[in-house]
Amino acid sequence: MTTVAPASTLPLWQQRFHAVRYALPSWARHAPHRTAYTTNASGVRQLWSWDLRTGRHTQLTNEPTGVSWGTPTPDGAGVVWFDDDDGNEVGRFVVTPFDGGDATPLASELAPGWAAGISLRAGTAAIGRADDEGFAIAIVDDRGTRTIVERERPVSVGGLHTDATLLALSHTEHGDVLHPTVEVVDLEGTLVGAVNDGLGNTVDPAGWSPVAGDTRFALVVDRSGRRQAEVWDVATNERTACTTRLPGEVEVEDWWPDGSALLLAHEHQGRRSLLRYELVGGTVTPIDVGTGTVGGARVRPDGGLWYVFESSADAPTVRTRTSDRDDVLLSSAARAPGGTAATAIRYNNGDGSAVHAFVTVPDGDPPHPLVVDIHGGPHAQVGDEFDPFVQAWVDHGFAVLSPNYRGSTGYGKQWQDALEGDPGRPELVDVLAGRDHLVATGVADPDRIVLVGVSWGGYLVLQGIGTQPAAWSAAVATVPVADYLAAYEDESPSLRQFDRGLFGCTPDECPDLYRERSPITYVAQVRAPVLIITGANDTRCPRRQIDNYVAALRAHGVAHHYDVFEAGHGSMAIAENIRQQALSLDFVAEHLGTPPARR
Image (cartoon, rainbow, N blue to C red):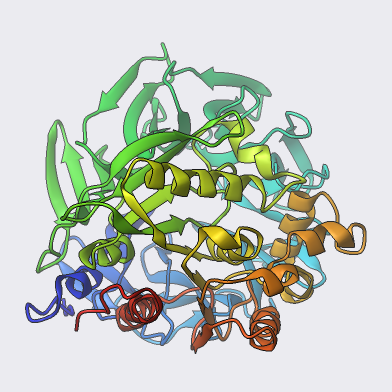
């Protein structure tokens, strides 16, 4: 297996970017020794196959902008992945032979579109796709390719039954785009069963029992106020709660092969751990994986556990557990230098709540220049994870605050839903409160505070420097929303639907709210120099609306730098990520006198 190993002559911050990262492998249902995974080992994240019997690793793709996902066909003959156009996320599912070769479309009859899920069983595939006309689900089997579901609102594949007789769908036809629910149809699209906990409550699909003939389906629901696991028997319509009595929230990772238990992920205070939940008796058994967080986990057909594990100080590894012993399956050939561990804190947001966050502090005496790093999503969270971008700032003398603002997942339904009808305000209240807390406690230098973020985080950066101009000394916004009205016109269909749900209306129905929550409205108030980085082919946060914002900065004489890279919504190339971080460090150094990027 060829890898690009960290060069010992590079600065430590660059070596961490070079750490070889592996996604959790998936395996062929009927040939589990044939697995597939993605890795940045070649310098750009690509798809590889791995034959466990021979030990052979084969690079299957060489896409300039990378490949983020792939899974073997049920018989192990090939590996399915999504082939888009230079990172724009518009394309087709294709199949590459397991041992390498040319990719062919899985369903050439389907026009290119945005992916809306896929599920594979022997001889059958369910494919979800979206285009400007709407959302559709197609079945590919020995009868050819046929569309069985067409909807105006988002619908996606939730999983084919083990026997390939039923298909679970995640859908929003009930009118609540932010809180999808589940239905099951046969392979002609006829409704067989449905679960709906009412408007404002989410029901997410989490997988069929692996046992042939078993009609149990795992769900994750939030009607109690936090996400919890359930099992729904589609044949009897009986739902059984999987009660853990633990703080935080629970996700379903997998079933045990005999259908006797679920593998659950317990999310609490920015860390994910694992549990085995017995479906008869409800016994909960914690699986001790150490201090850090689990990035994903699956149960092998022989009952062995595979999972990804990392912490803020240590790069991720893929591990396997048999009995109570762990072995490392995949890790960097030359381990990345360890990072500085983050510390969890809570602070009052002045709005009646406490915000959970991670703080990473450099060596030396405070006060330090501070980076406030806003995560994307918004429905995501910062965990105890290895982040080379954060470590690069710390290596250059910055403290880094990473807050789980209102809208973040993992802190209950009320916290996550706080943005509905009010996007762009609660997040910035929470972010500013974190900044002020670190200034008040002497950690941060109030004259050297940098606001940074990617995607929704990039949007909040631009909204923050416009609506809170006195708080920020400099800013870096990557692939942001900058002009909301123009972004809505150009973004993908799923994102338009998401915005309708978040705002509670379309721009035509409430143009004033979209303008009020749009960074371009506040350009004249911006005082902080701002670096904007975006992808030329991004369909989530398209370039035209960022061009509009940059033109407005120029017209108002605001110090800025605009950088466009050749990819979509982010880069999967090590060299490009290093280039962007060096650009950020140098831009901030130019304006604040902090250390430039070490080379």
